Image (cartoon, rainbow, N blue to C red; front, top):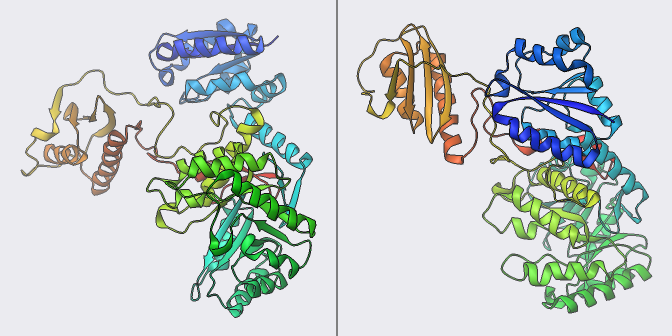
Amino acid sequence: MKRILLVTAKRAADSAREIAERVRHAKGWIIDVAVAPVEVAALIPRSILERIIAEKARGYDAIIVPGSLPYHVSTIGRKYGANIVKGPADIWGLEILVELDDKDLERLIKEGEWRTEILLEKWLNELRRIHEEASGVEICGVKIPHRPPPVVVIAEIYIREHDRGNVEKALELLDRGADIIIFGFSSAASVSLVEKVLKEARKEGLDGVFGVDTPSLEVAKKALEEGSCILFSIGSWNISWLDKLPQNTAVVVTPVGDNYTVPSAPTERVETLITNTKKALSKGFKVLADPIVDPPGTGLLSVSVTAYFLSSRSIEAPLLAGIANVYELVDADSHGQIAALTQIYAEAGASAILVTEESNKTRMAVSEAAIAATMTSLSLLKKRPPKDLGVSLLYAKEKRAQQASITTPKSIDRVIDAENVASWQLFKLDRLGSHIITISSGVIEDYYIGPRGTMKIRGRRAEDVYKAIAYLGLASEPTHFAYLGYELCKAEHALIMKKSYAQEKPLITPPWSNNIYYSPRMKTIRKLVE
């Protein structure tokens, strides 16, 4: 039986005990909590930590100390023969202990540092094994499972006559998480344009990776000649194409009827899709079935999701969900929508999502989709909500307030309200002194420490605070003023956004800059490219 000691401070003691109890109940391990006599874990002095470890070292397999400590702890461990692991900066990161097995814990002890990636990598490797064993259809070199997990990301680029950089964009989207690229051509697109784009794509190494979306049979034939590995799309209106295209071609089959209409009743839609799918399969085609995602306000839930749910129980082919039909038509940030839509349609049976980046508001949607696909795949694999899985699409908001690791002066000589300072008056710069910036109770607080004493300048706006600093002569160098303006602006935006603020730490970290994801194309774990 494993014995673990959690070292924390007064403020996080109750949370640590709660987590310890959950781990004891789930794992049967002995988890004790040692509380240092200070308020904030990041401020535990080395001497106090050393005293705790000296008293407890011999009784535990591992001692987990706060990750926010500003000093190294390995030497303390060696001194007392203790296995010290520097834990997460956030106490709630310890929840991952519930998911660890003995081997995972030994790995943490060996590395001496908390790595949430340990479980994430374990889960993603499990996802890879599930993917390899799943039944599915090989399309464009990617196995698309009949039902998720995993979820495959297909990205479409719409081609216009005089556009440039389409192939470069395709290469970028592959780096950013797309598994298959679709070049979309309008009914007015010429065969020569299609030939030009696809030849360039093959020249740049995209052979076997791209497909084509076209309403023209002539363009479809040329696309297949030029290496297209999937064709969008076959519906009732053009079902006769099946007699004019090579067998074993991969096609997307839809319930779209004559005049490009789609049955409005979900049962009728599914019946039409079943009929078209059976025809394609009987003629030797590979099929990806698309029950059609309806735009919001026109049957998104009542018709579309229902049709996917019914199709997943009656069609022997993978399902595709074009979720861009939703997020491109909603004036809301795309990453949250993509996370929810991927989860909804995957639960309804879709194992591939089609995404685009056609508007400014949806830039980076492919990267967001890669993260969402991984998050949803792990959710389905572990049969748990898409939360605390080691990968997320949190962007502007945060799950929990982060504890600042700074120490503000305990004794203040003066408290100054920035709004009341005559910032327009002349002032004399003082070249000495430093500033600590924080936010508290809805205001920005700037602590000045220098030869002028110790002051706290308070204000709701960054402009008021930096003008007060300037008027009082509490900064000197131009670069220092620029730095203060930058940090005060971040603090003001943290207040507006109801986020934590930490000086010299990023206020917003885009999800694609700190996530790894599962690539169905490569059946491996990858780091997203910004």
